[in-house]
Image (spheres, rainbow, N blue to C red):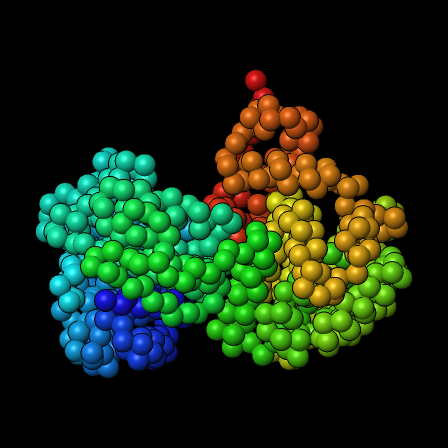
Length: 560
């Protein structure tokens, strides 16, 4: 008995393309004598379809695509994820296809409604188990959250049949859907997933699935989607566990792949295990995949970015070149009267080493025209951040003009530390279509730079070691306005990703003045973040789908 795992890069809404991709994997799996092909959650339409799921015509088109897929399946059982509408009820579904027809359909029981997930907005929960037989082995079907068991009895679901579906206590004490599959006679659990990446996510998946194995006694085959979808990146990393919870198969991260799990009786035999990546390699690969798919799936011919000679733009440039190829990347250095000579020298070296197109456009003449136009209004007023922001906005205007002419998308270079504290200029360095480092703290930027240089030395060492500066006034450094980045990042992580209050953060050893400063900057910068480009999420909480703070907000944290 051989189960194939289709770790597929699906595109939201590309029904014809997704059907073609699944059929290609069907043919490849059948060619390797597989008995079952398991696809990811909602593979037919891509994940997450968001408010497309509110449209009746979307479901009709998905039904037609499912019929086309079924017509192309023979000689193998295919488990495919798709949305389904029955009357006025809508479900996150998975259907079993054999020899041109659908023989069983499962409706997801547990609908996640936390962090980046909004499935209760769109779907009804299912109640029934789905078990099917192949060569005398009985397989149960679950979909992603069904196996996590995070909803408690107070959030019990009412299913299509009108009876209550208890979604389980929590991740430690169990989830109902795997137990329901076992009680219906399943011997092996097949799990379709669209589980987005964040750092340390894979170990959490192992831990959760091992609890399910311990509770049910069933081996688990876990198929996860791969690819970028707006701010989300799906890392694949599909795997299988035997009935003791031992890892028997591990597929690669961040790439499409077809894997095979061999069963002896109803248990998984040891197979191929892809070695894990280092933490920096994981994040770097996630960023490359996010850029590649955002650019490619949206049809942009290439990317533009402002190259400053600083570390953020250097790392962004390397990611862009690695993601889509140097020939599609245009780096633009826009020096001002405050730009250090070494910044230009380093920018040229980076562009040359990576082989990207490189241009220099001096902004002083444009800045002087702005200042002349504003001279009457500014008469008698001292220079301040206004003049600094004008320089940044000149650069943003130039990049957007080049984008309009070429069709290439501007990728911004600001990091999470800057987005958190508002150390960025609206319509200036925030101008663009995609924010590569939006969820990357400053200290992680340094780690990524050092990691990339272990592959090939494309970032000059002094870019990594010199004090960071926006170079918008003489002798400026970031630490003129901000706490040291190691302190800032730790406070921000505690507050943003772990919801810790200022008192808890201070108790962890951080100075009250630094905590107050960072939290205050986070609060007053919300209006900027709301206008920033979408960016790649790599932490459990980024400034995007799962950060929903009000702009108008009078709440203040107070120390006891």
